[in-house]
Length: 512
Image (cartoon, rainbow, N blue to C red; front, side):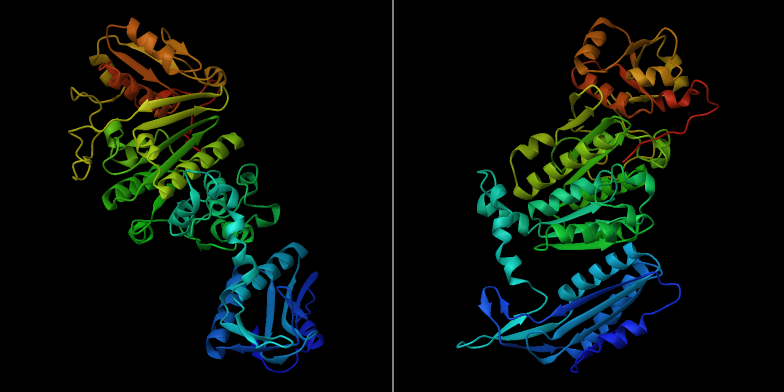
């Protein structure tokens, strides 16, 4: 229930209205009129509201919060008219079976009332003219916005002008999981003016070791809205939007259009390819990352700079990438997604600042192995014959992956046509024990680019690389081709097409 009234608030009646046999907790917030504000004495306040809009917005808030916290009952009353110090201006009560939900719901109601309700107050000061103040803005917090980012804006690469560019930026984060949580937190901290979070998922207990914006009490709640609540508490100076729904072909164009940069923090190739294609079509820079176990991949795609995904030989249909699948239930090292998420935020901020070094970053794919602390940069040049880069929809088959037109990917049947190529397995120590490795193959762990280039130099014939799920081998094979080894290939599906040791099958994985 929400109400705007000019009468004194009857707290006893409101508390009684929230009593229920099944409620184990009642959290009450009372906003009192104080006798000072921003260092000035206050003798009385005049509250004025756009009544119809305030009522409509208040009703909507109550509905939204009760949907966000099932089982919680919210009551909010906002008083208008003349008030003196000690009077109650706002009363909020949240009744729930559990205290944590009641606390969280009450806090959300407090913050949203202040942010969204069309209410103004006139402050009366001794010996001075009264001043109208918009209750949706805390002038003290707004005045401290410059101090909030002072350490960042003091960097010569940022400065006041750069901080202003950040404040005018609009950033879309798709996926608020292990990658999206740290990325969004640092984007909010950097002061991007508009930050939009899109995720149709809900917080799960197994998420908490790596999805750092969530707490135990968030389990079962929508990720996007809870992440937005946490970020608003960290930086109230920026606009944070939450869409608790998946990004799809029907809404993607609306969400992407006009953005300064988009972060792809998702966990499936259907969405990855859709965002890749749409961002390049609209000319919006895309920062994409993925993590599997201990390893991560980072790439920045910007039209006219470096190669696109299809330039690397990636199949143009997500169904062809089922060997890497999605992240549901996949093992993952928490700090690995944290590292990649922070790198996504770093690159996105540099895009917003128009840093020249960003143009260099778009020409490479970064491979990071947090287990061996190994970092590899793989060149990603644009192919002059790439149909997508030429503005044509990608072909339904695998794109070419070398200058001579030979496909980058090869399957087991295609390997026979290569006439006994040398097989090189790229695995970590742990993966070498988990997977059945092909006989007579050269095994490299860690799969650093220097060792691989040495092996390639010793091999005159075709070279086929294979890793657990295909992504690592494809990136490394593309790197070898860029350095002159035109007959380097990647095995489609990787070792996931081989049965796991001691298991009847293997489920492909690509964790975010």
